[in-house]
Length: 225
Image 1 (cartoon, helix red, strand yellow):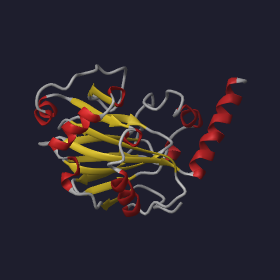
Image 2 (cartoon, rainbow, N blue to C red):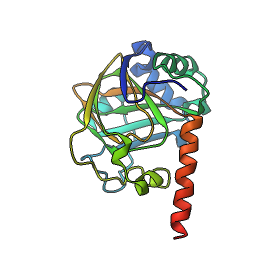
Image 3 (tube, rainbow, N blue to C red):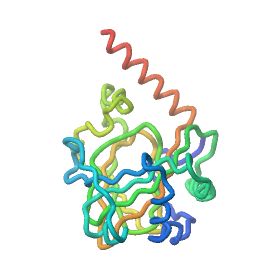
């Protein structure tokens, strides 16, 4: 595995029309119902509870402009091969080399002016922006405690309290992407006037999978006292 040791922004090679509004509407129709989530967007940088589920109504772009929501079509790799080429192109542009484990693909849309609350996860995301603009506020993994590290894949991903002190702010425009290593906590703001449209590739490496197992063992030992 070779990639930059910290977050890095780069130009991605995906065409802007890969996820145009007509294609997004088609993808919504193609996707199994259990792969689509439409939820109220976070209102602050800390998620205090579950978010209300919404239904897309009318024209998709208009819906995203007029609502404060996050729309996700997840696990594309389970029901279509249409994005395999985009996956490979993004990983190559991000200088990510194999072997990779459990590579997952998702499309995410955010209404203008909305937030994605503070969280962290063990898998590494490469987030390519095809429309709109967003700013990631990121902290290094050392700002997470051992207990927080252990909780990331046991329901604790979004239960983290936002960190004190300054973060690195990385603004990503359409045509750009951000590669973020696993376990870097972050929150994201999505700027107007258009919805933010992203294609995301998430993956594990053998090293990050071993690290997760280590945290799992620590979690089990802690439960035993």
